[in-house]
Image (cartoon, rainbow, N blue to C red; front, side, top):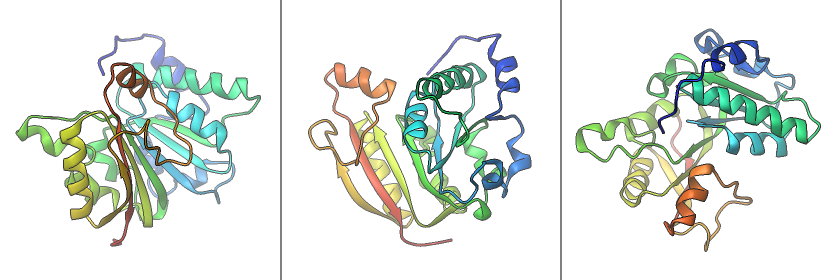
Length: 223
């Protein structure tokens, strides 16, 4: 998603208590950044404006969350949306961290000591052109990286509007040692999540009559 530059984003992020500016320095030590470091750690790749993560983290204070995106303007909006969600719930954002980083280089900021239990990938870029498909967040190249910090039997929750990306992703997951626990080609008619939090893209595509595809996959082969 393209977004206009927002001059306020960088100063607000740098002043935020739940934003980390140099995540490379936290590699292997993410759990220690949270007040309750013993809690499970979940990760969202490409958090966008943060509506999904804001609601998820507020509703699950017993889980710690990291949300990653590459664009300051996007993270600035995510920061504001997260703050608003916590304020409305009369809570402090103590179980959420947002950070700016290129997900293709994610092994520079996470390793096996971080023990991520679940990864969320929502409506990532489908990269439809053949030469660009290796950039997909669900491609086998990326999945092999995730396995370096995902706990044994850790999970990936994936949602997309793109038919070809979904079919390809199911193949990538299985090739990389993940078992497809459940899948759907129409999330509205066949809910597979205990509670589905609708993202901004999900709402938009659903209103256009586009069916949402989703799956839950579990890592079977460890590092």
